[in-house]
Image (tube, rainbow, N blue to C red; front, side, top):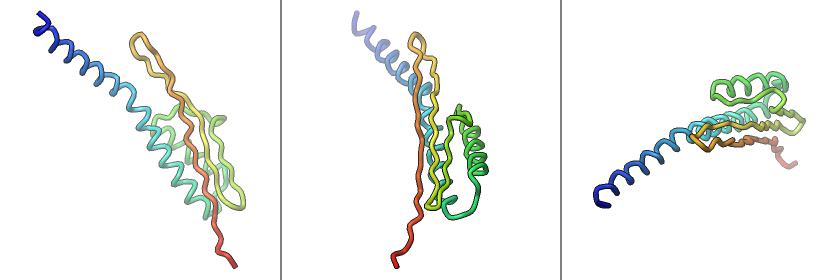
Amino acid sequence: MWERISPFLALAGVGLLIYLFIMIAPPYFNNWQFQDFIEGEARLDSYNNKPEAEIKKDVMKSARENNIPITDEKLVVVRSTIGVQISADYDVHVDLPGYPIDLKFTPASKNVILTAPK
């Protein structure tokens, strides 16, 4: 009898793993893309005169494009004479049957302008 049931249990287990991957992977992938954008933005904006408000606007646009549920209050952009720092903090709620979870993400990047020694 177990010879007939075990293939179905194995198939159900594989199906469950695929379902979990489909539900959990997109928030991690979106965060990875957003983190990549933040790193590039901090690097580029360290060497130009773009104001903090404009940087924040560009980062929020990327957040919307990557389905990142972030508010202006949770996004911090700091421009100083030595570089740019961008950080964010957000949660993504995933409704798994019987076990809802909140995934916490804190993408951040800091770029410092290096000057040549004199």
